[in-house]
Length: 433
Ligand code: CMC
Image 1 (cartoon, helix red, strand yellow):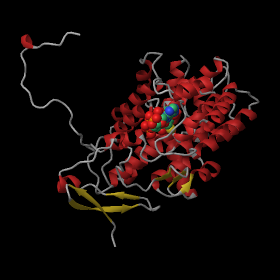
Image 2 (cartoon, helix red, strand yellow):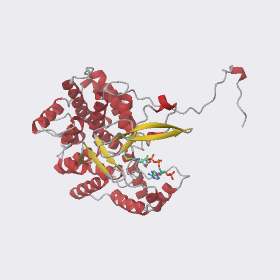
Image 3 (cartoon, rainbow, N blue to C red):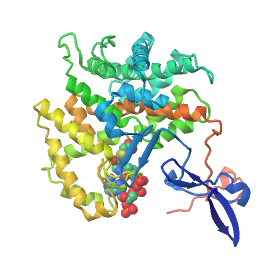
Image 4 (spheres, helix red, strand yellow):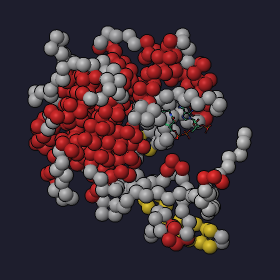
């Protein structure tokens, strides 16, 4: 029998259907609430609102579980590649050998960026943040590649996805090279997705880049861990903007802008800056923990806390392990790794952090890994964006294919002035302080 919830308003009962998810989680379907009761729901930050039904990513924030298309992220990080995981997210199944080869060939074929786009890059001020550049460039792809497939044109749609996946990586490396005033390095057909990116970032005519398979593997894991995270802020932005039936590039550009924020993807840059501050002030995390506890102080411990995880983010353990491996392999000692471990140890014991269920999130160690690979700090969030791209694409595709999909248009509770008359300029007065 279908389950229902009963809502009582002014002594009158209303029955609302319950929706059951694949893992047993339940939701109250309120889509008919307003037409039946005149009421809307109020949920600032959508903290308790399901905006869609999705079959892509499963998270359990209480147990610290993350799965893409049912497969635990730990298994994907250990056994898969970023390209294979991207295929899984977008298409719903792991590819056969043939499908993976075809996908890789398409990624290779679409990896070049229109030469005219370089001019675009060259006119950004040198100090411009790479996230702003990336968002603009992705939006500009619409102008350079105007063919937008219709619904049902699967092959063309797949081409648009691979084009975007492949070009974003090239554009990110290109913008880095141009920002440094260096020669752009083109993608190579003989390199994998991740190795190609590292080569485009770091190869130079005077110092050829030697590809290290351990670094390539570390980058694969970094990108797999970021590949999707269900209805987070940037994915919700992609879905919301996409719901107006705008083209894919514009929707993804909106996702990139959302990700830039320090409460979201921008946290990986903010964490390293915070760790550096702690290090420069002597390395003791205690004063920073005290500031984070102080309600009068806007300071937050970056890389800590999560809207969904109320325990350890499952990605942290993997990220920390990869960090340790890469630093060991490179025989490099990063003092920020010591600061991070001291800070984590102190914070997880701290009653404030315990009471608020604040644990390290994916961004806590990721910046240390990126530093070790040689990625400059202002490119950290771009690295997150490249990783999240298959997630954004698969969520956009799921939304576009959903026959029940509607324009996203939340409501509000109005708390402004009641109706009043227009006042002519000469009669307007402000109270004096
Ligand atoms: N440091 C100190 N206090 C915190 C922190 C933190 N990092 N995070 C949350 N709190 C406190 C907050 O002050 C509030 O306390 P109280 O209830 O006493 O007023 C309580 O915890 C709940 O905070 P909230 O802001 O209502 O919770 P939220 O679910 O909206 O916040 C968050 C989630 C990620 C925005 C927040 O934890 C945060 O600002 N963290 C730091 C930034 C960060 O690391 N972001 C990356 C998130 S994971 C990767 C990603 O999504 O991109």
